[in-house]
Image (cartoon, rainbow, N blue to C red):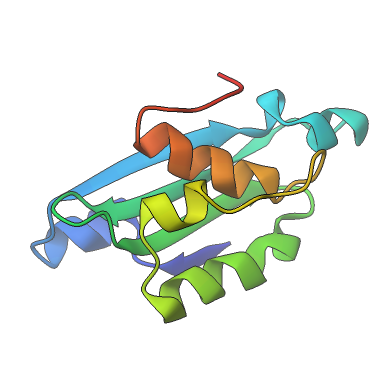
Length: 109
């Protein structure tokens, strides 16, 4: 699933971006579902951390579409997503972890 810009699209648009990926192999809910293949990736501007894109691969990633579209629509930053409580264990927790990893603060890696 893709929402917004992929890293290559952001580069073509002339944006200097940070990207970070969080693997489902480190996500508690993915482990309980025995479906740890996949990841969530965030793409954000380096200058102001505004999120410009999300990508996700794996079972159940359609459940993340609301979080992706919401963050893009509201102009969220990495700090906004990283600072929002995400229930544990859920696949949505990988959204927060990707943002935290982009900031250098991932909890579960």
